[in-house]
Image (cartoon, rainbow, N blue to C red; front, top):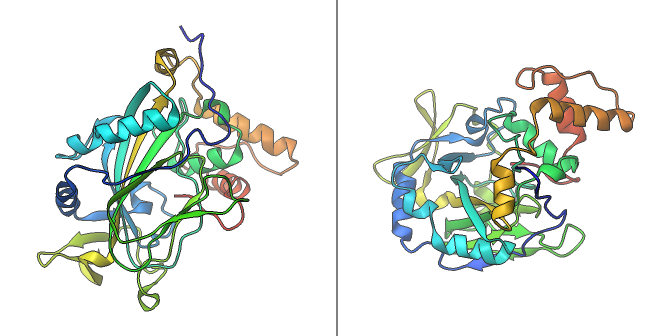
Length: 319
């Protein structure tokens, strides 16, 4: 086994594919959104204590190919997404791997970014989540990148909150999907396609939300209003429609059975030590001072070096 390995193209595998409607039962999606309250900050979900919340909250419906949120099964195994991924990625084997909800408070526009990538043998179970973005931006781990389809669906009819994306690269014009959103989706190659969220809400309501702490929660009250709570106290509240809601679905895309089998047999996996060695070799080649990293979870000096050197192009960020 292990004689076939899939090395994905360095460019987009798929041009964006709009889907409207995305789900057959959008009311059921909104019911699950309500059932998911309260929501943790993005920083807390990914255990990045140094990060600001940015007014961004998240919850997972599925991880590692398994549904972990009761009631999400019919949405995770959305046949429309699976067929679209087959078409866009020219892939025979589509394996849904993750699904999450994103809730954004009124805020200024976010920088463009790439989604956190998936690598053979080095996902957020094997390495800390903060390391995945630098691995993607560095280009050093392309050989282990897993082709992933991302279907992002929006539910938001307020002001702003556009989805801007660059399917032909940052040196070409962007495209934009704009509200009102109601069960509208774009399926794309978001680990390799830069994209961003535009300013959400009227200008006088936009804040950077740096005052929202790591442990804050976004909770829906009995009047269908969102409340931001810290230590049991409400520090901000919003009408239901003021919060931009998106549902992100991800699936592995394998060209054929042989490629899927090569992933399953783990014959071409990274290890945490390989990740450290590859970063160190590149830093040395570039003449950048560094020290040999200790455990990634606790070595803050190495984290600062890696996240600073291997980041999005100017103007970007990672989420």
